[in-house]
Every structure is written in structure tokens, then in C-alpha cells.
Length: 181
Image 1 (tube, helix red, strand yellow):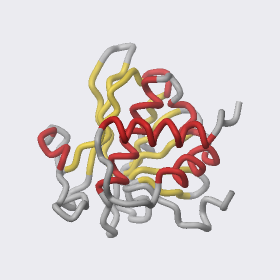
Image 2: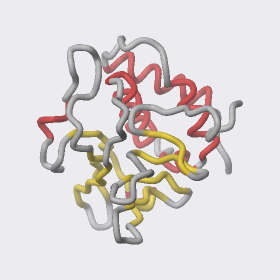
Image 3: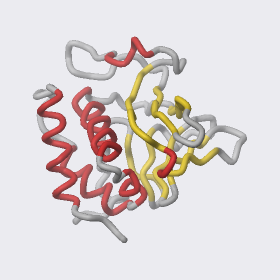
């Protein structure tokens, strides 16, 4: 298996950063991004220590939207005819939390590089499938994420049906294995 920092593997806005994986551009000092940590999703933002959302609080419904504001849910499918994510205003990870129950959003800023629609949709499908199966904690294992991303990244910018996305996410999860205990 290739080392995660050395191979430059990425999946849309997801890329390796400092020994873990992050959604969004973590290289800019003024940016927002979301880190996958062993204890949960960690929202990083300028001039702040950030905030943690433990894996156990995340119920369901992880989805990505694109745009400057979290209420831009109509911008969920902002993709160009050439198969790229349209817009450069950043994005949001939406989820439902428990104890107390609430809708929650985590902001991330986009990289300078464009994202392929297929990669963003595969990432979202993986997040949903892990959530549905109660396995979100696997995202805190950088080696597991690296194996899953290697399986999902690349390929053609096609086969974007929900059924095909679920199938490729299931294949990536099987290929990545059970993860660290």
C-alpha cells in the first residue's frame, strides 16, 4: 500500500494532511476544513481551536453541498457539463446529530484545484454508507481511509447513479478491510 502523504491521493475535497485526512484546503491559514480524527470530525477554522463532533453523535444524513452559505441546499448538485464541481465558494458537510437532536453543518474551503463531480459524489456516498452502517469511526483510521480512497479515486467521470455510487462505496469499504481496533 502506498504511503498516504507520498502518493498525493485525493478524493474531491478529501486529502491527506499531517498524518490524517481532511475535507477542504488545510494549507491556507485563513481557511476552514474538517479533519477526520480518531475521536470524530474536527472543524478547523481561523483563529480558533476548532470544535469536535464525536462519531457517536452523528446519526445520519451526511451530505455535501457547495456554496458560501450552509443554507444553499439547492446548490447540492452544482456540477458543470464537463463533470466538475462548479463554483469556488467552498462547501459544507451536513449531518444530523443526537443528544440533543439537531441539524449540524461543518464548513470547508475549496482547494485551488478543481474537483471532479464523480470524486465528490463518491466521497459523499462513502460517508453515507459508513453512517448507515454505524462505521463512521473508520474515518479516524488514516490507513483505512487511504485504502478506501485509493479504491474510489480515479477512473472515468461516469456511472453516477445512486446504485452505482452505493456499489463502488461498498467495494471500497470491503477492499479497505475492517480497520484498526
